[in-house]
Image (cartoon, rainbow, N blue to C red; front, side, top):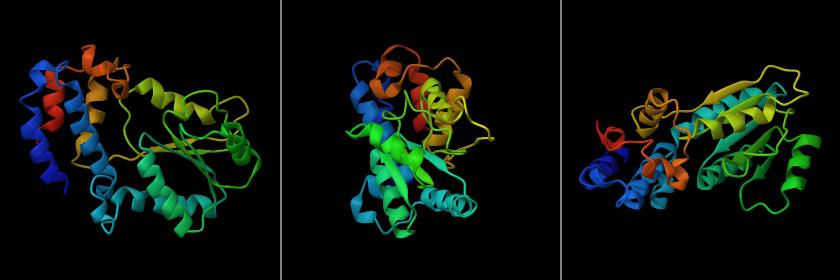
Length: 220
């Protein structure tokens, strides 16, 4: 499924990237589609809900051991749809959890529930988890998808590193092999100053990501 969509998006995008500003929205749509496919194909095509997400399988292999050993984990994603898939699996496994995204109204109550309760897992969206959280109760962090913005990623990890943290914190970045996620990681490594968040469109319009960079994301 990923390769099928990649071929189609490549043909569409490679003719547009010479004028990134003009075609920014279309390029962003294609990038988002490929990133979602890297997580779970049913995010793009709900009729494929029977196709298992390899990334979820890997995550839950880790969680099973962590929960059994009494650890607590923060799990971040930029896609609330994918966090919804994680919630479904947690329900199936009877694992207690807390949940926070940009639409959560009782934010303080949810945070206190995790801090003072026994739930071993806290699911947090990127936009909801950037600021003001002190979650030293957790000693594991899972980043389910690569983030374009290194500063935002660092802020998420820092939720567990605040004053009062007495344990080592383990951070796992889950990257799908042979997908756009690997290419994003490579691009971030080359462009260490890429601090503009492409989710807001700034990186596409401000020159932080060049036409050649974009072309590389769609090539074999």
